[in-house]
Amino acid sequence: MLKAVYTKQLLNNFSTAKFCGVSPFHSLRKLAQKSSTISSVKEANPETYIVNSLSNPTVPRPRRELIDPLILPRFADPKNVWWKSPVVHAWIHNFENATAMGIIELSKNVFGLPLREDILFRALRYEESWRAQGTESTKSLGQVRGSTRKVFPQKGRGKARVGTRRSPIFKGGYTVHGAKPHDKSIDIPQKLYNLSIKTALSTKFAQDQLLIVDELAVDTVEKLKMINKLKKFDLFGRKVCMLYGNDEPNRLLVRVADQFKTVSGKGKEKQLFVANAREISVSPLLDTEILVLDKAAVEILEEMYTEDRSDDYDELLEFKNND
Image (cartoon, rainbow, N blue to C red):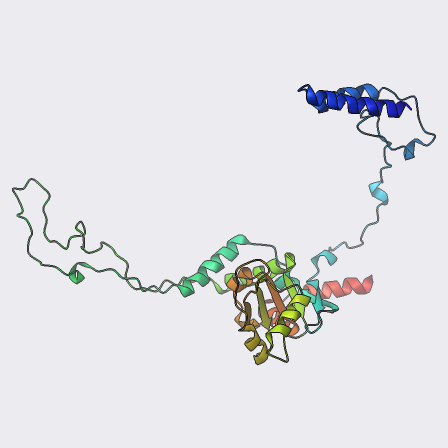
């Protein structure tokens, strides 16, 4: 009964304050502080008593039992070998029916590196320089059309001397230090570029944008069947990069991928990028939303970019055997 009376009083106070120009929450706070002094009714088991924070803001909740850190279970790994595991795990799916086949181990040196934006930036600048034509050209003094006679006398005009109409201060004159055709490509160390590719692959893995399948192959060039296959993986309407590991590509896959064109709009058709894993670069990895690799492509990437870390494998196997 007491609770019903105070609830009705709270609602009346709220509506009155709303129409009087006073903040209703200020009135609620005052009334809540007043009602918190009523603590005569207590249940038999205070631990199961749920306190209303609005009507009883000052009533403390029962404290939870603290766990002694000395009795916490500890992982017996003095050399910290397990957390230095050289592999990360990912699901491998069937490309035909999009079902999970199992778990595959990926090299941590290729798919588990931290994000380095500076490395990716330098790699993107390096790849963009490949596409720079460097064919821009401006005319020098000897290439500009015009007479070589002196336009005005040297003295007597009270103005600056002028030797030729082809001067850069006049319209149609030559350009000072103008651009000439040249090679615009820049160079970065090979180790730095390899690190950028591994960083891009690790970024795709960390963002859950990496899909691994058993084999990238199709048996028909029908576009509708490829669309249904992409919808099973929830890839239709996304920019997808597919990398295969075989030396000879699946020609049917390439032909059906050429039929996809980019259509503006969310959920619309997007272009498919298909290439060999040995021709990987940073730009398509970051430009596309989803990266699809087959098992052969994973083996090639790990073979190309994995450093020798056999000691870590030996320590991990030794730890597992002792455990």
